[in-house]
Amino acid sequence: MERTFVILKPDCMAQRNVGDIISRFEANDFEIVAAKMAQLSKDLLKTHYAHLTHQPFYPALEEFMTERPVLLLVLEAENAIVRARRLIGPTNPEHAAKNTVRGAFGASTLRNVIHASDSRESAKLEISRFFAETEIFHIEKEEVPAFV
Image (tube, rainbow, N blue to C red; front, side, top):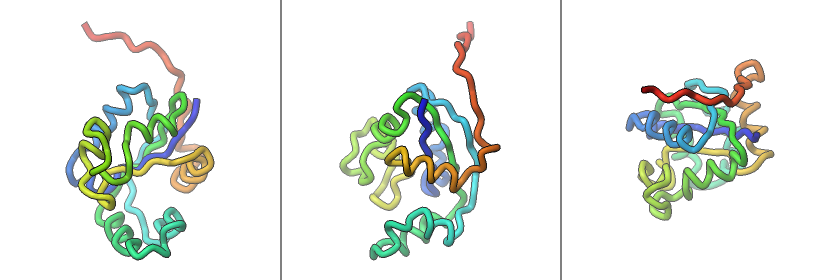
């Protein structure tokens, strides 16, 4: 099993698409092993987006990501990183298929509803940045009985 890190961004929270997006992950056999809401600080964002702070769009990104709280998730599944990114779609919603998260809910490259780790290294780093080890649960996969 592999873990990936996801942020449901301020626009996702404002549009009330959290349930729809989580349902997509659950329907694709992702297990939620950690979740919490947080108001991200500018200092934390500078660390998280260190590779982007020199870009001219960074101030707008920082402003957007501090507009309101976000939902932080750690998801677990076989090949979680690649599968999550496929489910999410490209950064620019205009280039995303309509059946992807960004294709369905994203408005622009900035307001694209979701962030997900792009590699095992970034997943490990991002998970540890936002979650203590004690906040992450080990959940055994079991058969869930269908409701009659």
